[in-house]
Image 1 (tube, rainbow, N blue to C red):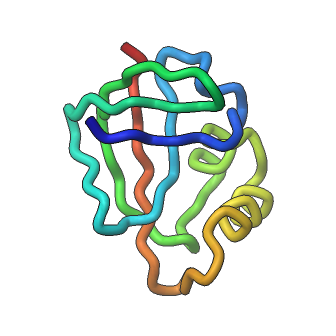
Image 2 (image 1 turned 30 degrees about the vertical axis):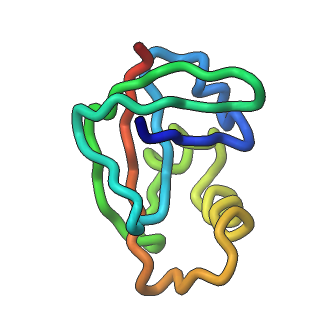
Length: 102
């Protein structure tokens, strides 16, 4: 089972029935309908991937930023820059993953 780790519970989203996460498009495979293990600190639970959208850093809008972290576009981008260092933000694709808590 794929694990998705969170270092911070942005926007208190992990307490919700549905939530998002933004991840780098990489070799790690995420697929719609997959069941994944969500890990935050010493807690874990399962969630189902409902939908996945690919986008670029420059495409981050208010919907993505506020729902994912509770912050404006600029703050959301700053958070991503801190989380993922040495990334070419002009070419790196991102994934907006919509999950439903099981």
